[in-house]
Image (cartoon, rainbow, N blue to C red; front, side, top):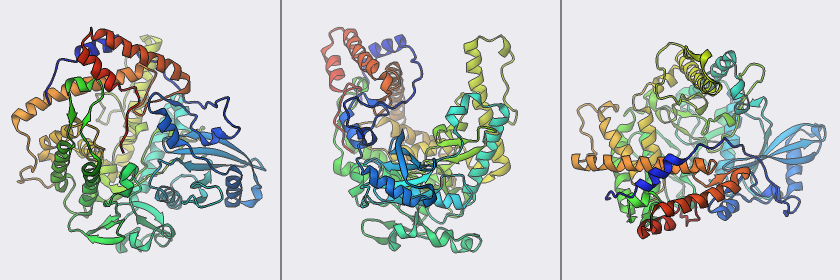
Length: 590
């Protein structure tokens, strides 16, 4: 991979860009649509590229009257019939409807998109996870009923559940008082302690036993722990196949790969429906399966790929998937050393955590800031504790100088003399720092197992490496290699590696060249992210709010025209730009 000098015009353009205003997501109903078409279609935004494909993935037609009748049957009869159904929200994998019954009672209907794989398992696991957590005292919506199959009068999978109590945290975020931030953190840590205290027996996802074939089930708890549980959960629930989207999307659903559950010395092989004996640490089996699914996919479907502009200027040509496979093999060589070798080590304990803890999924009581409900547990997976530990998005501190001591954060001394804009910035930093501080302190008091994992020096590099090893081949060789390089540098900090030579080695000359390449890679990533911001907040899938779409199309066109002018007639640059323009339709292979 040779470096070139095709970075100057992009960097010059970067310096001219301005930050956009924040945008909000709203529904838009096309005037020409049939009366109920908006209930089936995605209307919460537009897509700057590959929009027809994105809309097709999110289009789900169902029998409205049948769903209303099914919902009424699941909910207590005293509330009467469902008299109204309104689209409430649309996320990355689901459409959520507000149901209104005859007496004014409200409930929620959640319908997955076609891309919300695994079929059956995603819905079945979410319903079971919600019920188990409710039994364990975690504030989640009550499930009135569900169908993990589209073979019902409504014609879709669905979950009918309780409407979340309280207000969304993102709606109250900027008005949180110090006392409310304190209550938010303490109640949240208390909830997480309940999760960390559940003595799960295996890695996988939670199901009702009735939804999973017996040969794909493992017990919820070990025999030693089962006698201590004061409920009937071990009789109703089991741990079954991993419901993580990354194990199933695209052509992966048809691959003969390991998806768990894994416990003690075995992992279940789903497609053959038998138990495949494997020796060693079950946490390692999970770590291997993360990469093995991508190895199998890449061998079958991977092809040489060119990077998008502007990266294709500095890293030209089509890149071979064989080089990606070689990196994945290096990851597999590190797997036995990423986690403690002893299966019973507390840091290996199978632990359930919410898959997307952002403020949109957290509800609080408006009067005091305490957690009232946590929603959207789809794709939740039980994993080794060191892989689920971390600061939730609402409690992260984005400042580079994270306050790791025990001194409580304070506003700057010159706060009173700051401008309105600077005060707002200082307030937001203080808000995040105090939540970060409270979260860490309360974990030290109430949830020491989590604090122990948070203090692991390689918590973030390890999670980053495992995450990148589970990503699809896209022509990008830099990110996974960077994660591997970092782990070899941290080798002595990994558990149980004393006196053992690292099985992965990069020669000094290769590392020197890679450092130069990575610097340019990061630079171009910053350029593209700046372009996305300038276009109004376009995400990696091309999503943009309805309000910003028209401006985004215009600005993308103007941006492209500007870059062509700055190329000053360099035909090679112009060809690279036109061929892999990051905001244009492209072929996708999943």
